[in-house]
Image (cartoon, rainbow, N blue to C red; front, side, top):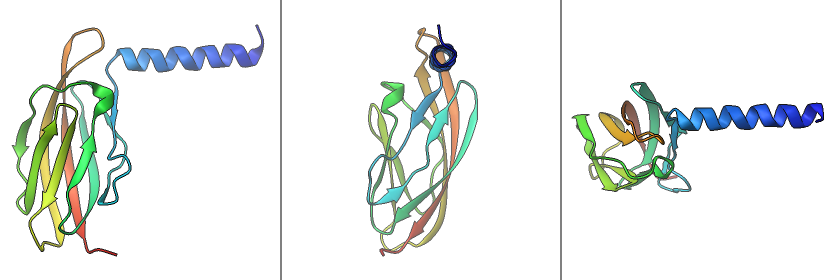
Length: 133
C-alpha cells in the first residue's frame, strides 16, 4: 500500500470516528438574509456563534446533518426578535420590525448520537442585525 493510500485511510478513519462520537455541523446554507458560521455541536459542549441577519428578514439555520432533533429548550429568549424551531432539522431567527443592532439567545439542543445515545449541546448566539445593502 502506498504512503498516500495509508494517509487517506487514516484520515477516513478519523472522520468516521468523529462522526460516531456525535459531532454534528449546522450552517445557514445559502441564505441571502443572513450569515451563519459553521456550527459544530458535540455532546455536552457549549458553542458560541455570531450570526449576522439583514434587518426585517428571517434567518434560517439548517441542522440537517444531525438528523431530526428532539424539542429544544430555549434558555434565554432574544429580546429584540424571535427564535423558534422551524421544523425537525432547522431553526429560525427574525428580528423585530425595524430593529438594528445586537440581540442574543441561548438554546439547548437535544439529539441522538449515531449509536442511539441521547446527547445535548448548548448554543449561545450573538446576533447582529444590519441594514440592507
